[in-house]
Each structure stands twice: as structure tokens, then as C-alpha cells.
Length: 166
Ligand SMILES: [Fe+2]
Image (cartoon, protein in one colour):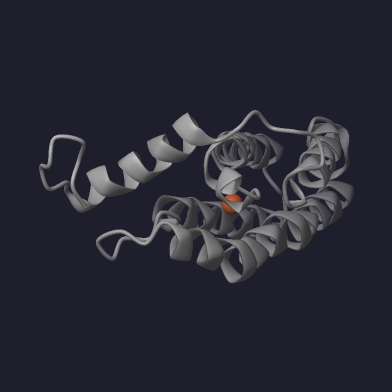
């Protein structure tokens, strides 16, 4: 891909230019104009889980273990399922629309999905101990949520705008 001055862009520069072009040309977002990406429901469910994580330290070891396992399972059903759906359904469309030097615009997003999956696995592991560590669980959960919320922001503001009708 060439830039405005006719210079060849690197593959990374190419992806960034494609994203910037979308941001510069995309019309103001209209309610209901975009595909339902499921992000609003995902945010609500993660907020509910955060409220549960805040009180796990107050539970007995047995109750805590069960609650931590249930929270990890809920993250699997929400975050991991959402991410797998995006990679199967949304990302191929986006990458096809921004095909550029063979680099998938969704590549960074897929790396973040993999990091989220690792965090969910780590949370499930923490629930297995005889005396589950509530603090480590809460810290790992907070890191996951921080990554997730930043990720959703980029998808909403840049990547998924490519799915809007032109
Ligand atoms: Fe995503």
C-alpha cells in the first residue's frame, strides 16, 4: 500500500493507515446503525461478575472455591464465547474489507483474545486450590477486565465501524 506521498508503507503502517482512514471517513454513529456486537450485554455481565469478585474474600474457603469456579465458568461463557464468535463471524469480514499487504487488521485483537483466554484459565486454576487465594483471584480478574474494556473500546470506536453500512 502507498501512502499519500506515494511511499510504500510497512505492513504495520498499512494496518494503522487503514484504521485511520476508517476513523476519518466514518460518519457519526447512529443508534441502531451498526451490527449488534454484543458488547453492551458483555459489559453488563462482567460488571455483575465484578460485584461478586469484590466479596469473595468474605466467604468461607469452601464457598470461595465454589464462587471462584462459578465466576471463571461465567467468564468462559461470556468473554471467551464472545471472542470466539468475533473471530469466526466478524473478523473475517473486517479483514476482507481491509485486505492490505497480507496483514489482518484484526491480528492485534486476536492476540488480546488469547491473553484474555489465558487469564480465564488462570482464574479457573486459582479456584482449584484447597485454600483459594481471593486476592490473587481479584487482581487477575481486574487485569482481565482492564484488558477487556480497552479492547472493547478499540473494537467499538475503530474496528467494528468497518461493519457499518457505507
Ligand atoms: Fe474482541
